[in-house]
Image (tube, rainbow, N blue to C red; front, side):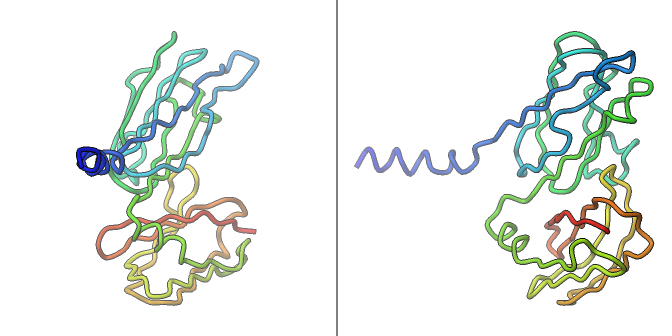
Length: 205
């Protein structure tokens, strides 16, 4: 019986366990390896921690809403620093975050994205039930949302710029114009009526 009580007590703690995602920071504009974050793009769950570790050069991590207004919240390690520093941030709001290094000339190659997903079963099932076609998209990207209640669809560049925003108002089948988008990789961000944010990557051919 005591073992059963211990198991029941530990279960909620295990469900709330945080995952720490490691990102290396390094490189230089003076020669050799250009400034970088590795990995450059992460997909995590709400409540997870991202830890950046500087391995070489002078860098920082800046995802402030001043630089990236579309970020759901700000995060920053402060001014660029050299040496063996680390910076951690816990992401508590779902959405797509962009960031870069503000050391002069570094943002050309040293930028990244963090897609934070709602970890609830409902959100996971909802995201998996979204169908996008055709991929790669040409003039139109069609969304088959089934019975999902989605208020708004946004098309984002990987650097966080919102290229298009469309009101959906609960439609099950949506056709988003993509003819004017340059070829490349994009993120589709869907905002549900209850505030849940779901994201899906797609390619424009």
